[in-house]
Image 1 (tube, rainbow, N blue to C red):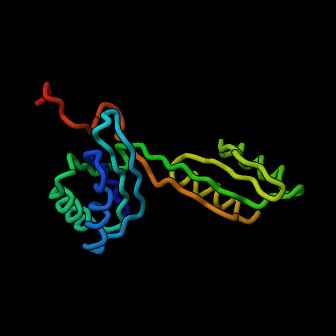
Image 2: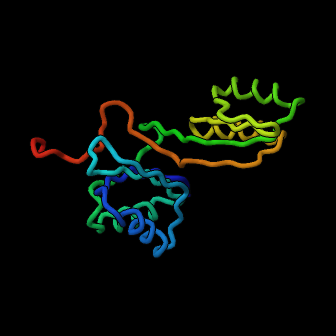
Image 3: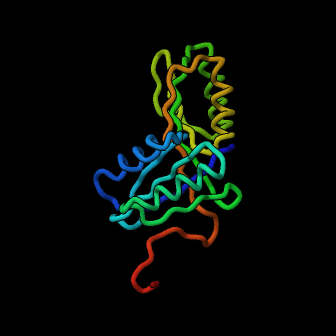
Length: 170
């Protein structure tokens, strides 16, 4: 068992996300995180899905996804050959006695304070899971009020590219 990151190119059309999510739920596969965005080609979206399971589950998911007409290409991204990031917003309790310490932590983690109120600070951090988990752990002592996460996005390192073949390449 483990986490597997799938990069999936799909046609940018209404209903694609619900068909893919439906496929996961019908098969009983759990989606750890899901991020979707348009690519350099406005007709194509990229989904980054993190699945928790063994290689058999990943193979089954890939086979089922390939059957969907909207799916153009699927690739499993190996952690050693890809870069992944997540954006997280953390709202933490902060009063006059704790504010300076929280600000110092935010600076150490190269995060940003994006909102300030009398009783809270909202922090924006992006990075890998270890960095985010470490900051979250450090902030717990102050009282985390709310957390919002984008889900992981990932891209292969170096010259490897996942994209739709153009007519010149075929």
